[in-house]
Length: 230
Image 1 (cartoon, one colour):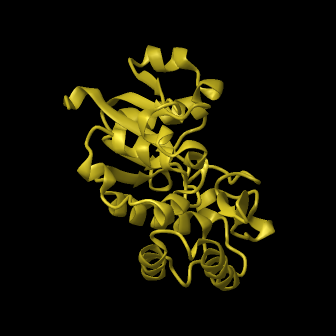
Image 2 (cartoon, rainbow, N blue to C red):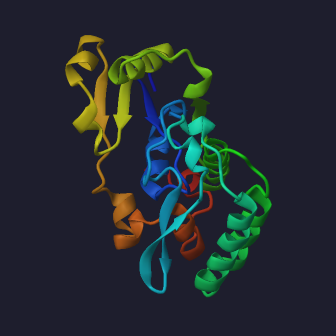
């Protein structure tokens, strides 16, 4: 890809995100975990949906309520060891009959940290592990390590330009909060990720569940390395 046309994606770190999150990263040259912003309650940051009792149900990572108004990177987990044990019991109960249960539960035992204090660290660590599992080699960075400025649009533009990128891939809701005039003024092209695509449609309604659900049910290892068309 032409150096002047590099594509960047910037997203908050989520708890075992859905496949589209990783699809966006695979399409990009640069990915930034936007972890310096404030944690938002009842969001994808500390919960996601799994198939439990044949219903789409939430699994939530408990956090310390006193840290709700803090940055994602500073949001503390509450009794993580208890969650860790309960999480594995839940997965065992409802996924043991799935095609890849033995393989993925072993992978999870090797990769999910037994001790971790912060939500951002947990999400970023596991997202990186899954990127490797899927065969995605996109470079990743964290906004908490950057010199951020006030203004949502201004800070995004600053980050994009710092990587010499000229195209920004945002999620479907990006159009609701982005000031496209500011991006155009800076000669930055904004692309919106289309949920109606060949990859996601392969999984029907399951496409919006956690990537971990799909890993238990389908063979996803190195899927992006094997099929470059994604």
